[in-house]
Image (cartoon, rainbow, N blue to C red):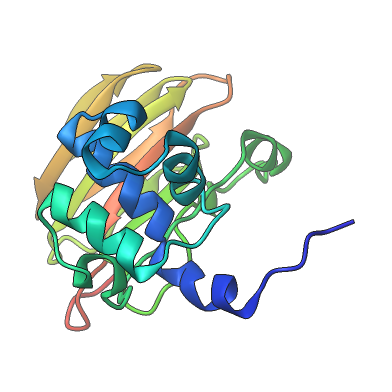
Length: 198
């Protein structure tokens, strides 16, 4: 049976108070027992606050703030931007590619203004082209498995599993699988600005 969540817990959840408490303690390199000694609070209480099994009272939070040298606003500033996307290995392996085209699985969460796109790309012998030559290409490639042929303006680089490449270029560029074994890469690129071509 699921434990019910109080209104206070529900309304404070976006502020991640417990996570912020733990991050501050780790940054100061304090153990729970050392923090308990400095605040006069029990280690059990501090542990419950960090794991969000208990909501801190304002006087308790003020005591902790004094030790860390932060204001109460540190805990209650609006969480304006936070995006986390977890893609499980089973999901990646369940998505088989088509025989002729590269398969692309987005890894970042949908958000209003993302900074980066992260994709797992399963390459084939057919070249995966980045963009038109007039557009600057910027990206980071990590080969997860297989062998990759990276072609940039007529120059070829061969990349194997575990190899990485970072590129910034305006030259025509493409990637394709080398050989018959499965070929997958992690591709991270900045999101093009509204004026750029994709």
